[in-house]
Length: 101
Image (tube, rainbow, N blue to C red; front, side, top):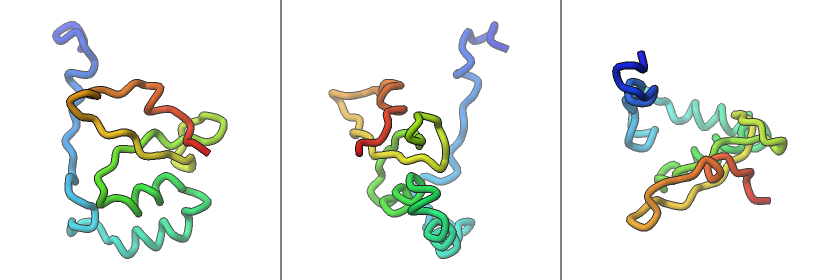
């Protein structure tokens, strides 16, 4: 019901389940995750593989996109510039930009 708040976003808050590196949690089996990504990735899930390999760095990533611009888990992505006091927001164009070649 948007009439009470005026915004669809105010009522759609999600709670993060994991805020530390994935392998620090009992409900994540990293050896299986890594094996699954390694077997399917490099070719099939390049964005997920990059995120997994660099998880300890705490990076924020662009949306995974196919070369056509279609959002897909089989697409590629790249790390985004960190937000700070000077840069406090991101644009939609930044999030959905095709990865540099």
